[in-house]
Amino acid sequence: MNFKAYPDRELMMMDLADRMASELGAALRHQDRVTLAVPGGTTPGPVFDALCDVDLDWDRVDVLLTDERWVLESSDRSNTRLLRERLLTGHAAAARLLPLHAPAGRPEDVLGDLSAAIEAALPISVLLLGMGEDMHIASLFPGADRLADALDDDAPVLMAMRASGADEPRITLTAPVLQGALSIHLVITGPEKRAALERATRLHDPMQAPVKAILRNATVHWAE
Image 1 (cartoon, rainbow, N blue to C red):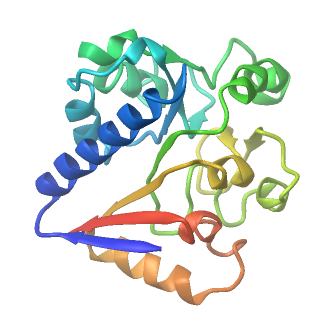
Image 2 (tube, one colour; image 1 turned 30 degrees about the horizontal axis):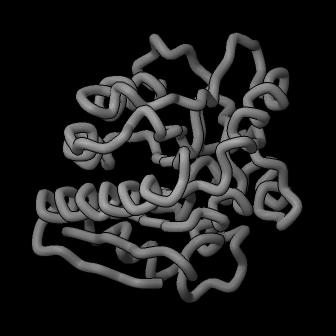
């Protein structure tokens, strides 16, 4: 992996947004459509704030989340809600959202329909990921019920996932989709997550540290 440390978080978020915008612009010069995949949570919010103001051909960009909680978009726990509020605004309002949620009681009931749209948009051109202190990425949690299947080379594009650390069922991109991204960025903050990243590099089993699935080809961005 390529590790980049920054003197502060604000500079990191600005630099990361600039790099991602540059990569999207380069991809748009060679392809009719490109795909941007991003995480939920609060950490990437400042990246979204900067990225949405960049003047790109957003109408040719497909945007999707790396994972989603199985909750309505009206919930304050919805990653899709955050995405609409922080990224799909300004210039980026012209982008096309590929949803990871549909009206259904369980994610398993709509996996086929949701997967079809995402499969057509692969590979991911630019991928942004976060990481938890437990070394999870997307909703690939250590100890999750179907983690081994999601890490397998033959995993489907999307899977439902349940884990003791997750309050709701999740839907997540699987390891092969994440690994297949043309550009991978992992953003982490604070000493605890840096220590978790270093711990992951020492472990051999991705079942214990799912972040290992993407580290080899990732650029890691860290600030205190």
